[in-house]
Amino acid sequence: MGTTFNCASCGEQVMADENSLSAVCQKCGRIIALTDGTVGTSGFGNFTGPIIVSKRYPVLRGISILLKAAAVICLLVGLFHLVRFLANSQHIDLIVQLELYYAGGFIFTALISWGYADLIMVFIDSEENTRAMRQLMERGRQ
Image (cartoon, rainbow, N blue to C red; front, side, top):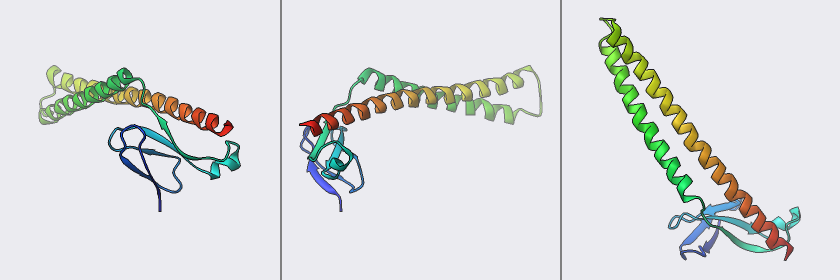
């Protein structure tokens, strides 16, 4: 059975697994780092209760979403050009060869854009986890 508590930001009831170190509020999207008293054995102090980690960097999150949207569009355009190449592959001329180059370029751009978007989210998640651990350690010293 998991731990149930209310989100300090919006009041929504949040349930976390027993082995989980964090939970996400489904209503406001906040990441909540959890402690259950057993953390005291690893040097952070003996305490209970959630730690609220606010979301920062909304512009970077927006850029990540835009990059993912651009990646999907590039992938669709690349697949379109690939289908056109395959449909006209009996007549290999300059235009048909360009279709293949366009397809490869758009698909490659889609992969790179999606990778950059995920990289931005990894950096943001790393910052949130670092902040949650800092709050956890500060709470344990009290």
